[in-house]
Amino acid sequence: MRATMLYGKGDVRFEDVAEPTIQKPTDAVIRLAASCVCGSDLWPYRGLQPVDQPQAMGHEYCGVVEAVGDDVTSVKPGDFVVGSFVLSDNTCPHCNHGFQSSCQQREFMTGAQAPIARVPLADGTLVALPAQPDEDLIPSLLAVSDVYGTGYFAADAAGVKPGMTVAVVGDGAVGLMAVLSAKQMGADRIIAMSRHKSRQDLALEFGATDIVTERGEEGIAKILELTDGVGADAVMECVGTETSMKQAMYGARPGGSIGFVGVPHGVTFDGQELFFAQRKLLGGPAPVRRFLPDLIDQVLRREINPGKVFDLHIPLEDVAEGYRAMDERRAIKTLLRV
Image (cartoon, rainbow, N blue to C red; front, side):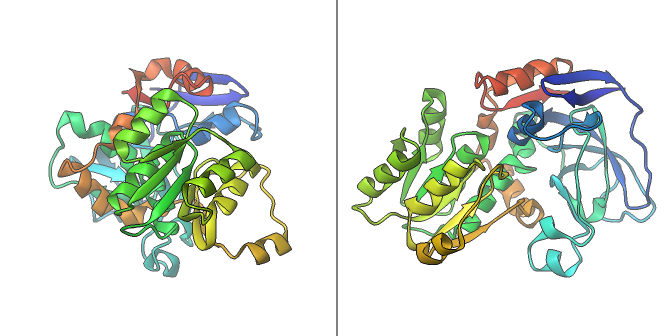
């Protein structure tokens, strides 16, 4: 079969690879219904993460089980499944505490920008739907496996509750999903920080009440202006840069919470700065598996449509264009039709 490989900065190839097979008794092999390009894929694509050897790309996925290992009992061939981008056994102490993304057997999904993918730790990672979903729900179910699940964790980690004023730093796909998640959790006021009209429009559709175009110190000042000098009750940081983390930290009120899910690059904090800021911080790779059953139900009940974040749909074989479009900000998020 053919699949997506990253060779280095700007070098994405769709080429022949061996078809995935069961390697361990805890594996499953699935035929993907769709795939996509993640914002985190752009870090190595832009040369900001080293690529020492060709990498099989893709970690967001949903589809139909084709085969399972001998130890797999929770899913079977023919099931439509959604899984997390972090692979977990869902039984270790960390999983039982709700942090499957720190599972003692943790692995990270790879190779999902392809028609077929191998999923290790299938019992702990995959959730089977009760029936085959309607075709129009596929983009939203795909979003659940990472981008919506990560945005949801940002809001959960920030402790978003009904009636709160919250802010979202970052207008990429995850930031937009954080807006949607904050709305689902009952936030009364949602400040979305964005400079791009298409992203602003989608943020407003997902529930944002205010748009802030400023960044850095000016962005912090604008949040304070909108909140009568107090700051937001909760902030979701969805970028991962020094500037975005500072904006999140000082856009929150003292005692407020920051849920940070942007993969950090060059982010540092001074100990005294953290000490006197008096903000609560929780983040990291999202434990999507904790949320999967509820998020899948939200999609199946058509309460939400996170699939709208895919504003470019192209065939899988054109994956290199999908990367270019996101890198050049011509697309928020690329869906790859398998």
